[in-house]
Amino acid sequence: MPRTLGLFIAVLFVAPAFAQAPPAAPARKVAATVNGKPISEAAVERALKPVAPENRAKARPEVINFLIESALVDQYLELLKVAVDPKEVDAQIESFKKQVAGARQDFAQVLAKMDITEAELRVEVVNQLRWEKFAAQQGTDEKLKKLFQSSPEIFDGSMVRAKHILITADGSDGAAKAAALKKIQGIKAALDSAVAQAAAKVPPTMDPLERQKTLHRAADDAFSAAAKEHSACPSKRDGGDLGEFTRMGMMVEPFAKAAFALKPYTVSDVVQTQYGYHLILVTGKKAGEPVEFEKVKGAVAEVYAARLREAVIEKMKADPNTKVEIAK
Image (tube, rainbow, N blue to C red; front, side):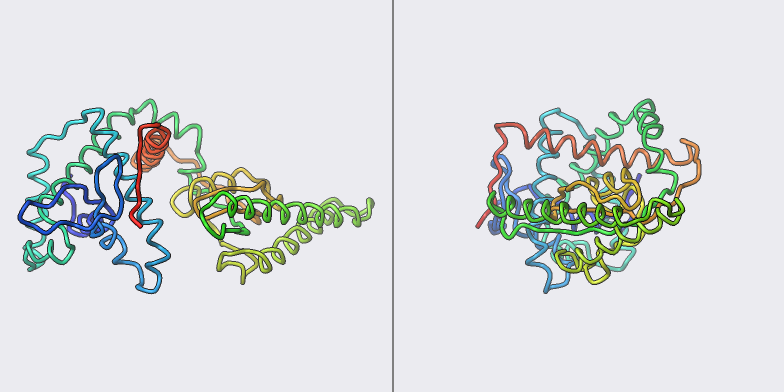
């Protein structure tokens, strides 16, 4: 399917450039290497362009990590020899050129503005088409239906409302992570104790519904206070409240998975994501509406592809031969 100009530009902003520039072009500064293949500094800068200048330094490690993971996926598909028809690549490039012309822009100037050569653009198209082909081959109807049936809450519009406490490590070394983990475990123990003490104060003769409301309020109040005191997330000002979110697309997978599995007003165990360590308190759940597989098949395929990508990345990272180096 031909890409729109907007989607093509989005791909240019978030995809790494691994092709070497033509011999006559100046050498590109390297931001990282993945198994000896470079990720150019230009690719990092492209990905950072949509980010406000004052936030780019903070966003840079996450961007580089994304580019490294994309490189691992590309290399995995190269090892599998997933082939792409050159005619498909030519068609994509020509479609992009026509859309640029239709927007009354010069193709060469657009590439120069994005700091990417046509050869590098072609590599990106090959990588994207290769991935789409692989994901389609792996995502058979049988596998998609199995995913749909096992996780209906992903596709039926179910939502939860939750609060969280985030503790980040002051550094990437093991000692910093251990300190962050110890801190959040201490917060978890204090919250459990506060809820237990509140439960002990409730008269046994209290109406069951009123008792439940009282315990829920105690858990909510204790969690909100802890979030305001300890959380590293801006949501701390609201007691850690994140509002409502769906099972997919709004929160990172480990966080969303844990939140949807929680009973309301039960403090989660420690949940680790790329942002740090979290405690979660679900304060509301909204059930979705039953939906037929065929009506959401496209969404199911997207979720399957996202999980497939994660699996490929983990497989490549676990390979002892994988070598990643980030330039200082």
